[in-house]
Amino acid sequence: MDSDCIPFKQTGYFSELICDYIDEKSVLKPFYNRFGDLHHFKEQIEEKAAQFPPENREVLYSSLQRQYATTETSKKTLGHLKQLKEPITFTIVTGHQLNLFTGPLYFLYKIIATMNLAAVLKKKYPKFNFVPIYWMATEDHDFDEINYFNLNGKKIQWNKAAKGAVGHLGTDGLEEVYEALSNELGVGKNAEALKTLFQKAYLEHKTLTGATRFLANALFGEHGLVIVDGDDPDLKRLLIPYAEKDIFEKLAHTKVSKTIEQLKSLEANYPIQVNPREINYFYLRSGLRERIVEADGGFAVNDTDIHFTKEALLKELREHPERFSPNVIARPLYQEVILPNLCYIGGGGEIAYWLELKSMFEAMQVPFPILLVRNSALLVSSKQQRKLGKMNVSVSDLFAKQHSLINKKIRKISNIDIDFGPQKKHLEEQFEKLYSLAEQTDPSFLGAVKAQEAKQKKGLDRLEKRLLKAQKRTLKDQVIRMTELQNELFPAGSLQERNQNFSEMYLDLGEEMIPALIEALEPLKREFLILTY
Image 1: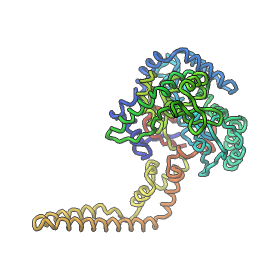
Image 2 (image 1 turned 90 degrees about the horizontal axis):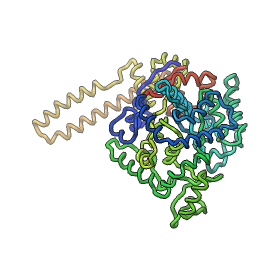
Image 3 (image 1 turned 180 degrees about the vertical axis):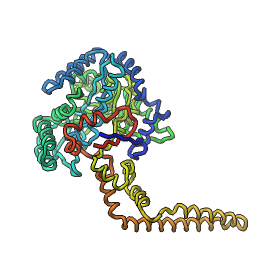
Image 4 (image 1 turned 180 degrees about the horizontal axis):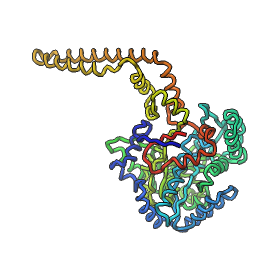
């Protein structure tokens, strides 16, 4: 793949907070521990090594051996699993929901960035081992967010009544999705490979957790990816003391709320990504994942008849930790408690809420990881590049809003100059003389002069728009071709990576797609990538 890049800020698709974080703006330094530069990892290794209990490694290793019991595991992943027992081994983590057939493209980018960073760190610090981790969000209950993917502009959806943690869901009903996918893919070697992948993942596994593990392992297992399911009784047992501080002392709520106030006080006026609850845990049972709330002097599970006294809830937590599911505030802490982790790689929204959590980690006495914004990329086919070349349009031009793109290009290719900038400047110079004349004769006329200037400028604006509209009609073919291409690369006016499924590109690239992306994506590169294949 040929590679080019542009600054995140120039894309127009990333928040001011994330752009400022990438640029290491000083106002954000109190909200993270160490920035994601290669040399900062030495200190992060030392801190995590000093504070990660050896017994947690044993629990992690045993749980993963059980989780991988029925998974066909590559030699490289087996090696990584064994290394997790060793005190010189650390992890790099990304997390993602159990989106159907991976969901949007950036699922691949997150995992590849994680694997690539582990490889980079091994070269830099050869005395240590670095294991890439994909954390499956099996306890998430937002089924509507994960039950579809987009292919060729069509939404392929799993229609099913669903309650509770999505990882527990059975895979019944996915036969219809398989048929829809097969019809859309058509025929050919790569199409058949995708059909087989979907079939083996979703039609040969009983739960969505099992299907997603198979899928991620099939795509990335040979590269050493380790997949972790936090919905595990033994791993949850390590969380008990931290859950107690959250539920009974409101520690997370207090600390995160204070951090949010600090963020709000900044001049940049960054939006708040998530707000903490007084209790940041759900109660988890089959078909149920509901918030734990204080009620009637005790505790209750929201929208149910389940109630606990303080003593009974504490007993339930200690005897059945698997029934306590951390929310978006508590889950990052859970991850860092059970993993010897150095860095979390996430999208802009994820990094935004992680920046709210540092003081909570400090209060819980858990090291805060390095935060790295994942790679973002636009995949452009050679055919699309050739079309752009013929129209004298660059890929970076396409990041503009469509009306701005059209106006800019119409002006460029038109044989008529429709830029009234010089006329407006001349008009301003003329009115400067009128202002001077009015001031010398009768200052009360200044208002009338100003009104006349505004009226004439407005008239020029209207005329410019009418001429531009007429040129758009004249150059209709060029406009249509350009906008069609922009719509292909930015479906629904959004970034390709947030909309399209990997299978569209896989049809062209086949089994070379993952290796090509591994070669192209650079986890420490702080720019948006444009990759031509």
